[in-house]
Length: 125
Image (cartoon, rainbow, N blue to C red; front, side):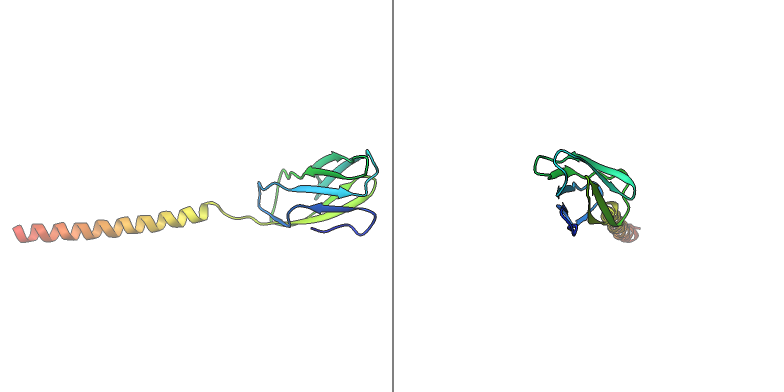
């Protein structure tokens, strides 16, 4: 959470997020009743209206998100700045490796069962 060194501050409720995680921005030091436009990399990510004391709180929503540090600007008569780190994790990585291990044990089990049956039929013949 990085505050702005001026009359106001922008605070984000998380330092690190993953895609789909909720993120809330809270700002102070805006002109009372002024519209607030939040942006990151030139893309609008939120809007709000400052209350009578010049503060606001709104959800930050990225339409496209890439890993790395994202600087969020809130323009409300003054410019407030904060940043958040975005990490991408693969939700399929764990299930893919689990599937590989499961298939391995099924194949080993099939080979062992086949050897046992082959030994049985060899003794009868």
